[in-house]
Length: 428
Image: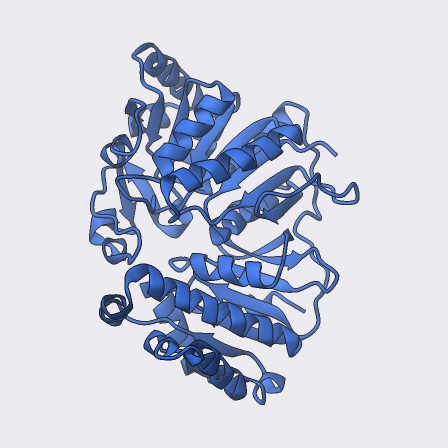
């Protein structure tokens, strides 16, 4: 097995987002949960491996340590290029974790230059003059301004990243991008001469991403959202390293019951849950404030949710969620503390997912990056085969364990309003 591309993702949904992009390009892709203890089994053929970490909101030094461990495994596996994947809304704080991880990876790879490009135009994330837009709004004017863990209040990515890193950060703007890959390579060489080490890169279309990917084919390290990965398969084909795998998206069937577990409080997820209700899908809300008060409060809340869900599962999908409006989230955080509130919700929903699987659920949608990480960990899933895309950035996957489970791990901000019903239509 020859692994061409080794990827490090800072959360679980971001990992499946990236892996799905690679599969669309014909790369057989495996997602691994956490850093493996040993090599992949010889029976698993993969052109790309994505290691999913839970480092986006961990302390910066922990994120660096985990990312370097992932890099060590990927280099031992013979990967020719490394890709550090973060969110298309550049979720971070002035302390990190994007900048510190980039610095550490550059040092470990002994490389003096890389790019930073979270653009994903298909999902409305574009960069112009270094400013990140979400749809028609600047990042700082979007719902990300009120993110409970990583509020984004500055849309200028050069400024944001410069506050996180000791490396000098510059910009490759839209004029160079419009001139194509050779002009981008020339701009990179000029920036190196100027002592710049990281370039934020403008991108407003998939064609821009293809040109960026081509220009960066020989960089040891790329850092981006999933968008830049759009052009990587063609780079490896141009080098004669990658065959076309027409069956890259095919997954084995996983007959069983269906359920949704939802922890994201994004505006997109709130709209998707509302759409689900209009279609008559039963939904049950867990109130985070009911998870405290006694040693058994969390267990009691989970038991109540399962007592509601169990008799309904045979009739069709059910949804258990802790999604709430921004004002409600603020009340919960003020009462419990931000970290404790998040931890309680993750623990409760992970327990719900465990019990749903025990009842025969084999097709599970999980909404929210932190929630996805907690659920996959609770289910003791160590690796995933990536399959067909539901919406941009969200593919179906199948766990590579003794009892396969189909999983859709959805970033809170991703997906059309009818995402949940659309997802089921892609499975037999």
